[in-house]
Amino acid sequence: MIETREDYLGSLRGRNLDVYLFGQKVEEPVDHPVIRPSINAVAETYELARRDPDLATAVSPFTGERINRFLHIAASREDLVMQNKMQRRLGQLTGTCFQRCVGMDAFNALHSVTFEIDEACGTSYHQRFCDFVAFAQRHGYVIGGAMTDVKGDRSKAPHQQADPDLFVHVTRRTKDGVYITGAKAHQTGCINSHWLIVMPTMRLGDNDRDFAVVGAIPVETPGITYIYGRQSCDTRAMEAGDVDSGNAKFGGQEAMILFDDVFIPNERIFMDGETDFAAMLVERFTCYHRRSYVCKSGVGDVLIGAAATIADYNGVDRASHIRDKLVEMTHQNETIYSTGIAASYQAAKMKSGAWLCDDMIANVCKHHVTRTPYELARLAQDLAGGLVVTLPSEQDFDHEKIGPLLQKYLQGREGVATGDRVRILRLIENLTLGRNAVGYLTESLHGAGSPQAQRVQMARAAQLESRKKMAQKLAGIETALDDPAAEPGGYLERVFKPEKP
Ligand code: SF4
Ligand code: FE
Image 1 (cartoon, rainbow, N blue to C red):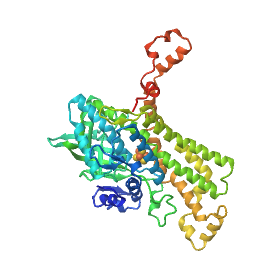
Image 2 (spheres, protein in one colour; image 1 turned 60 degrees about the vertical axis):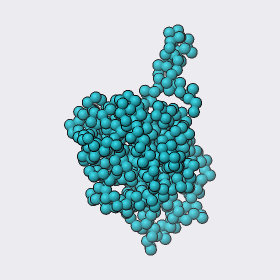
Image 3 (cartoon, rainbow, N blue to C red; image 1 turned 180 degrees about the horizontal axis):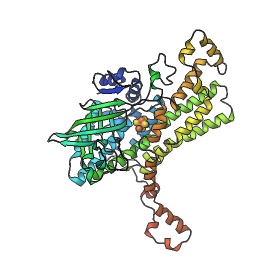
């Protein structure tokens, strides 16, 4: 079982993956200076489980053993809340995307969806899936979810594309399993995972049968190529020194995955052709994942701390407008956390026994996440001042002649080392413009669905008819009286009468 940082690093070595970065094959991702910070961030999920087992582990009903919470199927609303608390803590510890929530949310979604496919179609996916969960738990694996297809012409269904490979699909079936071809874009933490779960990316129709495939494959399966996504300022990790990186230890990871005739054996296939259930899977996965974005409130804690520190170093921490900006950042940040955790508390039990968070509030959470980190970044840069983008390099500070002059002229208030002031400014740069702005800003915008995807879900759940009737009743409009539609139902019902645990 992989339990420690060292176990984890060891488990990634020697896999001979086909990983490309800067036009070259990467010999050993673990030792690559650009990739290593993303591996360190995942390693922290193992270390947190050791240091704080109440927060980051759970006892598995599958194995009876204590396991990492990222591999646990939520058996109560409290389990979902604990996921959020763990995510916030890891955001605080790493200041970046620690990549494991995709697998956790895919596991949870598939638990209920495989159960319901079996119920409707007489298949046996659920037991297969539960066997895989137990297997992953026994080994302590990192599971990567691979959902987002490259999509080609967005106005066309998968089977209508000029090139069918624009959506991952089954190319042939044998008695032992299926072969898939296609590509998945911007896949979080895929190279740092042990297994990938391939899933469809959207609602599918009857003609899209070959695209309705879910299966688990080892990351090192032959036929898979990984192309590393560049991040802003990523090559700073290849420079001497650690100041200019801003957060030298931790980073996120996204890569493109190309599948060329990749084999999935029968025992690892959890959907094959059940097109009706593709939308259910996508909606349940995004429901979990959209409230998983409370991770950004942990990163926001770091940014607020950095903004408060630079205000202190500049000697202005008592100014009322500075304090007010820190309050505004806190308010915005807690809004993410509150909605995420509310979605978890408002969870409901699925037929399979897994608990699913509240779809409306999960979407509200993610929608806040598409906005508030940008506002926090603006306020942090406001407090940081222009130096955040005009600072000289670490090499200049180390220079015999100009170094001492920079130390003198870039000092803040008395008692603060110039070097510490530079470090905190570099961290603000890292979070708002540099490597970790990829996770904190743009991933917040597009990860788990772009803003419009949440608005579509919110519109579906909004129940305007029911709300109109409420208003009409109180206004004394006669046609509204005794109309069955006047009774709140669905989402509104759940808000006011939550199911007892
Ligand atoms: Fe987890 Fe957040 Fe990264 Fe998504 S963006 S994998 S929720 S840390
Ligand atoms: Fe993500």
